[in-house]
Image (cartoon, rainbow, N blue to C red):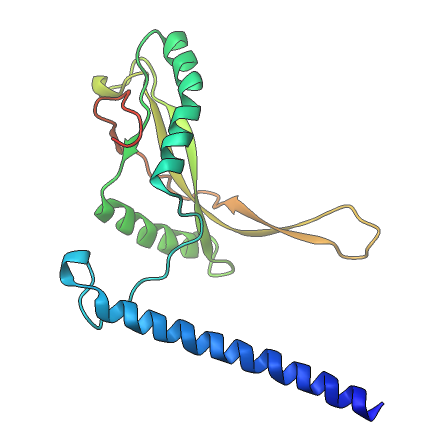
Length: 189
C-alpha cells in the first residue's frame, strides 16, 4: 500500500512538474513574441499583447458564412423587391461609448443587483416609410445589453437553476449604424 502511495505521489509530481514547465515555456514564447512585435504591427515593444476573445474566425470562414447567407439574402431581396442590405457598420468610438453607457444604464435599472454580461444583436428592418429615405425598407441590426438571470427548471432535484442571459428590461438598444456600401456587398467588403 505504501508503494502505491509513492507511485501515485510520483505521478502527481510528474504531472505538476510537466504543467509548470509548459507554463514557463508559454511565458517564454509570449515574451519572445512581444519582443518581435514592431510598431508597424500595431504593438510597441514592451506593450502587452491583448488576449484573443473566444469566437474569432478566419477570413475564409467569414467568406463561407457570407456565402451561406446568399440564398436567404436573395429570398429577402426578392420579397421586398429591392436589393437588401447585408451589413451594418458602427465606428469603434460609438461601440466603446455604447458599452460604457449600457453598463452604466444596466447598473441604474437593476439597482446594482446584477451586472451587464454581454450584448445581443437583433436583426430588424426599417419601415418602407422611414424618415431617412436612404434606410427605408433595409435590413438593420440593433444591439441590446444583457444580464444574467436565473430560472428554475423542472427537475426531480430540489433546486435546479439555470443561468441565462436576458435582455436588460428598459435598456437602450443601439441602432443607426451605417448600411454597407453598396448595401448588397458580400464579406469581405
